[in-house]
Length: 133
Image 1 (cartoon, rainbow, N blue to C red):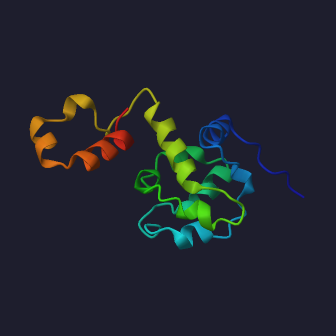
Image 2: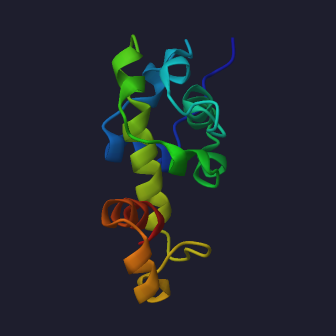
Image 3: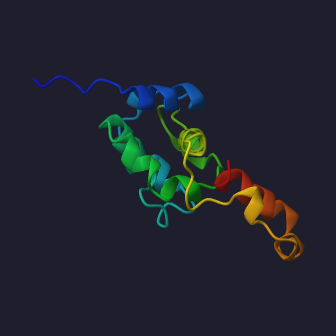
């Protein structure tokens, strides 16, 4: 019988930030089935959690899937184990945004006055929260 992989410090950090226990997920797929944008996410919620369980957190943090999560909380409502992927995705975004190098992300210095006039304030602020540090 093989020994389960030990939990990495990065996964522990994601668990602490999200308040979720990654090992509680038993991969039933209810989170992904209920996700309104699960088909567009790469990886979808259940596979994202599996990456964390396998110690491949870096792969998840480098994916676009964590940025697409709408935080609608359907995943957590449907999960028979109470694992809420929306909280995990939010924690993953926080980890990425705390990295010293954020190439490819929006910085306050890149926003123009024209952007502020064209983009609805709510959409602008939501995206800024996700894509800036």
